[in-house]
Length: 125
Picture 1 (tube, rainbow, N blue to C red):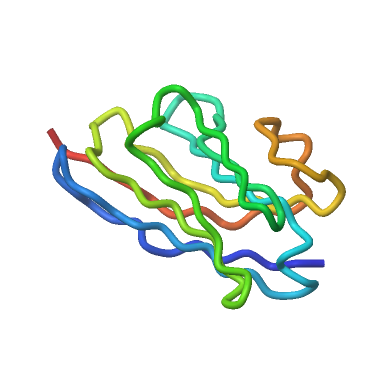
Picture 2 (tube, one colour; picture 1 turned 180 degrees about the vertical axis):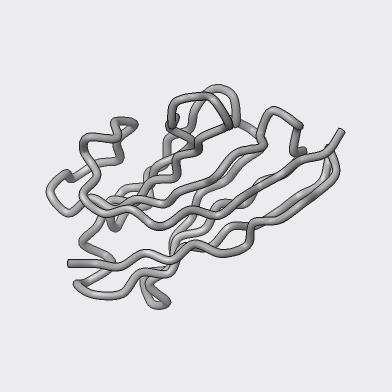
């Protein structure tokens, strides 16, 4: 079992930056593939970014590629999402997720076993 707690969300103007953090507790953090997803009002939850267990191989949704960076600090049991050049369409609740049973990063929600409660990101125009 692992517990995930996101933080760092808030209100920012378009073009600004935010860094989300997701702190994990429970089993060995380095054993988990981690992902970030988001859900905008009235829309389905969508993939944002993922990072593999130890090699730190990353993958991004096309909509955030070049603007967002996912990273992890296994010593601190934390995964981050650095978000730059934010746009109003990035407004959503952002969730981190963990998967114990897959080896590489995944864009599929069904591959993740544990989810945080989410943190709101609002980008004003």
